[in-house]
Amino acid sequence: MANEKIIDQAVTDKVMNCEVQDATGLNDFQKIPDRQGIAIPRVGINRFRVPLTFKHRDGSVMNHDCEASMYVNCPAGKTGINMSRLCSILQNEAANAPVNQKFFRGVLNRYRTDLRDYDHEEKLDEAFLKVQFSYPVKQLSLKSNNWGWQYYRTIVEARETKESGFESYITLEYEYSSTCPCSLSMAKQYEADFAAGVTDEGNGIGVAHGQRSRATAKIKLAKDATFGIEDLIELLRTAIPTETQSLVKRIDEQAFAILNGSNPMFVEHASKRVFKEFNQDVRIADWIVSLEHFESLHSHNACAVIFKGIPNGLTDSPVL
Image 1 (cartoon, rainbow, N blue to C red):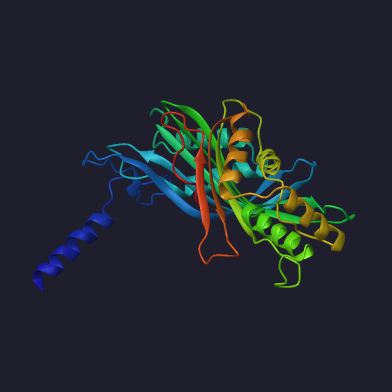
Image 2 (image 1 turned 30 degrees about the horizontal axis):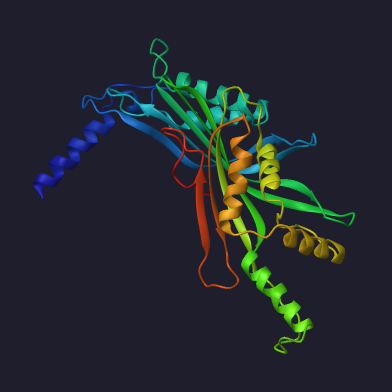
């Protein structure tokens, strides 16, 4: 019991007798020099909720509810960082500009500068910012004069380091429909056999199995490239045109059936379509796409991962 009291008193003395105070006279433990000599590559905050402004391609400006993750490195000899500065810098920058490459550059530069303890210190070696949100885009119906909101789960992230400079990435989830080529072929073969009297099984109508499918793409932007979220959506639509629809009338539903019939694909086909489109776009320095077809025939899913394949490039499947 006596030893416990001695330990408690030692802790109390250390807490109450901080050797560094801030401008208001409050103890500032974060600025106490650290004598352990251990650096931390990344320290910061996850899941900071903040509304951020985005300028859409049609000229509209919208606020999106975002979750931000932000880090800097903590050098050896430094006890900790002022984490509230991460939040206040992000909020201050967001109040003055929409989210784009310039915005990320400004935030990361301030992180490396403003999270120093003293002005005479060099910039911190690294800063990182990741923003997650759902990005809405107006999607026109295929045939009718209608439209609806299509939402894309999105991550925009960037890092700035002393060695590598500024790097930025976009990750986006794209949903589409995929009709199995083999199943489509067998359904049509059955219909022809029924019409010719070769078989009397069923009612003469065969339905190919299809599935809602998902591609999750992560790209690294080329240096100084002008490329945004809607550019990535457009690229995926070109590669895989059977995107799921947000609002349909009967005429749109029939058009969707025709579209799927014109683009039957295994997950392998979808992967190769993506490869061709992504590899020829000079605005993209590196990329990786994971694809999954949620089968209606099987209780398991078909999946694939494909990437550019440059040395030391993106080879881990993106996760949203």
